[in-house]
Length: 489
Image (tube, rainbow, N blue to C red; front, side, top):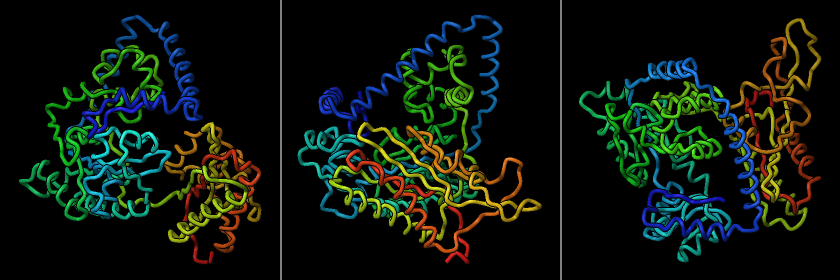
């Protein structure tokens, strides 16, 4: 069952009542059927893991191996740096209030009657929050104002806020429009006499003076702890975690607050009786045995407060755009003409952004979601390469396509997370080099129009055979973008 939980501003809300209403609201829907399928899969996974625990080694040698592993991780602890995580308060809703002051003091949500994206703090007093169906939200709060999202406007305001981040740390990280993380270590060194709290106060003031928006902040020696701390004194507050209290603090954090753990493993840990991070170390022998290395390392590093710093590539303030994505729910499609109009709209929006960025797309993904919430991704390579050096210059191999290692994490996750991925035309993701490591030259389209027409042809040929009444959501993603050469007019 899909449930809601406490969010800042919902402290006096009867969560059990809302969950009961949500359950009643979802009965018999496709969404509930999807939740039931997911729940069944999770239970099967948990059952297989629990049976594996029957084989848990109970030897001193095994326990010594685990303890040595934990001690080695402890040596990686680094408290030499200082970070501030910034989380904008109810960002989308507050931008709407900023642009329309008449909304101030009224419960406001952004989204649709189907699903809410966010809500302001006035709405949260009634239990209205992100992820809630708009119809149910209206039952909880009849005077609720639901506004459609304006992503271009939110990006515009976010750009202003990110410019402020860059004054404190040119290499700030901003994983989403409403949050960011800055490393203030050098800023403190260059401004003697300032404390981390002084910097947080200054940052909050700068953001408010530029936008009239409030923000909440967390200050600590690691990005993870800073993010967790930013949730403590919301809205419009901050929390400073001193280094000497780090170990004591992390033990009290609920496991579900840790990034990268995922709902499935959260349920597994909950089944094992593990709720807080402190429980992880106490059950280290079991967890070391059942988790694969990658997830095990992440979990124990979090539990020991070992900081995980972003890669240098993710520190860039102005990341190069590597993907353009547009999608739309299709609940108002009444015939094939409506579907065609939607396809033209999605294609036009993507091409407009592609033109503005002066890019070409090396591959595209057509996303189709049906009313059982099953998602199918159709992936195509649309720019091929030809051999160089002493290889046949004129031969181009469509199966030697472009750019596998150039896919961003966001793109890879968008492909991996969805159900039913189909790779058409090519049996693998694009690669920048052939299997024998020979360099290859990109074969650019003769004109930009030719490029856009090819995108449309593939999009149209993929979607047209699908019955319009079976499509719940349709999306077009232009991936692995490269600079458009001058000769490609």
